[in-house]
Length: 238
Image (cartoon, rainbow, N blue to C red; front, top):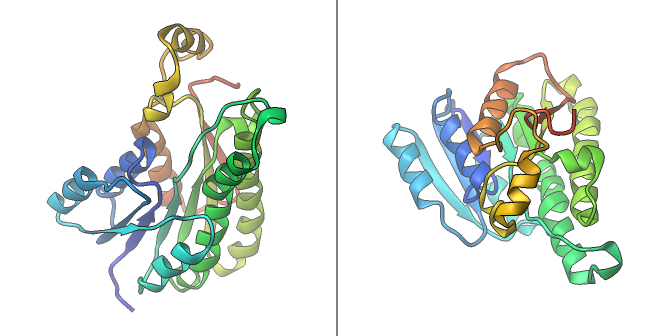
């Protein structure tokens, strides 16, 4: 097995995923694998390679198991898996069509399960760790985002259960629940809506991808934390 430490980041073309990947380039990894569906994370890949770290991009549609298996079979080592892939959706539950429910569950929850299952043997060999990106809505729920909230609550539940399953073998599993993060997901909000949301955040600003990336780095380096959900929300739901 290669002695080089390897990290995998799903959703690497998104605002949080790209920030996480860049932050990992400052740690002890020799290889970082960026996973994406459609948008190729070229700038992130170039940034990592300029740091002298091997970087590869894996493209695939996660959420059904096939892409996740193919990804993990391509690796000979895995020390950190960061499940960042996510999509949002808005609407009343009574008006949510089947295809929208399936889309939200596949990307936000199913992909996390399939990645973890496919990665299990590699993580056990390296005694690696996992950080799952959930959401504050998985903690407290959000009106008109019921399916998204349910999926992220499932991520938190998976995290707690997996931490207990894998701890005896030296594998740690934690989650981060971001609050309102200023990424392209916020593009659908008007200036007035953004101002209303901002007024409810005690720290007085939206979060950034870098805020979440710092949390990932902390959980990776702190070897006595497992089964926890780190809320990074500027005090939004405190």
